[in-house]
Image (cartoon, rainbow, N blue to C red; front, side):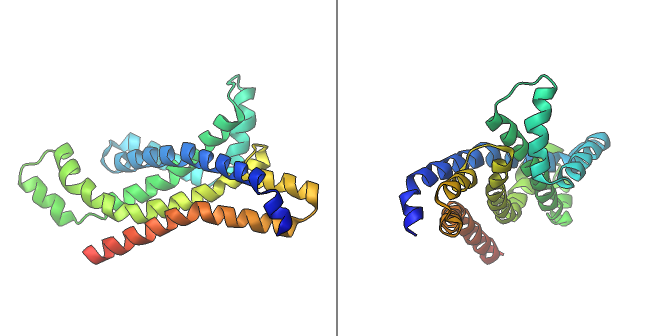
Length: 214
């Protein structure tokens, strides 16, 4: 592993860029998806249809294709953005599409009896959503949301194909200089693991906590 350790500072710089990509894209996409998931249940029919169409189209196309589209089509349409903004926008959209379904499923999983009880107490729609539905839906959705976050963090590696520099791109550059792919990519794999591991542990702990409470 001498080659890996000799190039570790450079790979760590790539890892920091990967973390920055994830922080810029995943939380924003998650919040957007939560909002869309809630509206896909309570909004008027045309809004629900639009959200369903968004989820259907975005999830049906690989994230790499969306990154290519954002990278090439936005400038072609006269919208000048940086490489980073283009791929992060695609990541946000892709994350939101998956989170929308998670949030929608969590809201629908709240027992209908509790909703009926809230209505019988005279709660208005938004009050019932705030006090009855959302607290339970959040508990149900936290583990899958964190697991989805891990998947999206790993999806940041696709930006290297588009040409955005991050950990995978840095590893490829090191391989080209050293002709030591096994050592370099094994080290890159370890760095990806270290990035994703805390989120995976948090997801497991929250899942155990939720299971224990129920």
